[in-house]
Image (cartoon, rainbow over all chains, first blue to last red; front, side, top):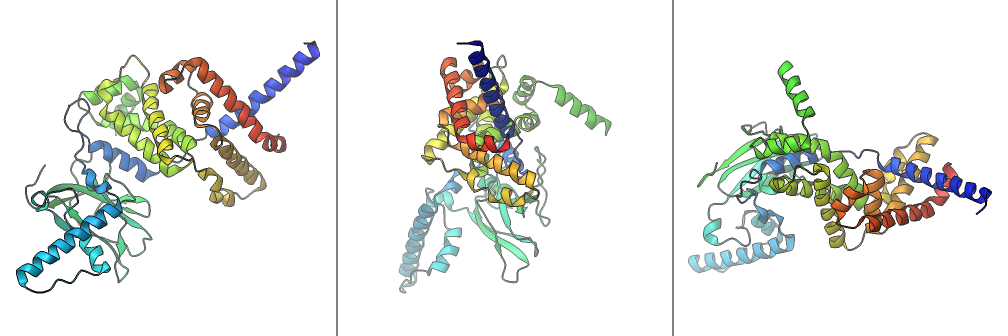
Length: 212
Length: 193
């Protein structure tokens, strides 16, 4: 290779390196970290047992991550079984619920995979957040792993409040609302006293065998 | 106020290994500091690797929760970042496998394009989108190696610990990724240089 060719190679190599460095510099730019993502992550961590304790780590109930079809099918089965039982007891024919009623019913149904006895203590809790000017409100809590997309709330008919009905097991549940991307505690409920990770949150107690 | 400032300085001066020790000794708040130190590079790697914010957040959250659960297994003689990235890289691989195809969401970043006001900004945004598109077109193992080397700036030994691949294989992946990127971005580079 002549001097000239070697020099040309070096120039090309330098050019290649600088173009790759330009690409890398562009890719090194920080990505946005959403506040609710960070808060949900830290809340998720706070739901775990201390590392190395050997305890079953998650207090969070995984059953919320059911596929919708499974939940609907199980809800339908429970609804029909319940209706038949009622018909037998009351001696009148059973009419299957309408799809609208079924939507409501699945929200209060015992969750699939649970035995009837185990699910007996569930109670449906209506969460309400008054925010007439919000465009999007969702419920996050230890019962849905602080997943901001798991429980979008519905606007009430008068447009002032946001609602969702959630069946909860007996015990203490920590939760908050995400209002247009910002985390907000429930102004009408006691604040959680264990804000280890600095996330504003509230507490709801569901009757039965309460756990701490 | 002074006490808060002192506590912050203390925390900032602690190494990752010291913070891990504090978590294991029963102070979960120390993990928040670790999260804040490493969240940006983890989320950035996952975003560049998977191409979408939603998936990136999912795998980053999963990786950090796994790291927290497995904290007792961390060997403090090694870098915490390397250990954490090994978990993250695995989560990204699993996510890509589950998806079975890589959808290039970067390409659809119309919002970014529309929000650019001046000609220079528009050109910069366009370049960014072109780079995202080119990175998305790399083979996953090449993309992974390129991002670890040139974006997260890990050494080859660290990369070997993170990926489980040999150093020479990683060098080859990075080289091929660079060549492919230059090929894909050739036209853009010609325009912008």
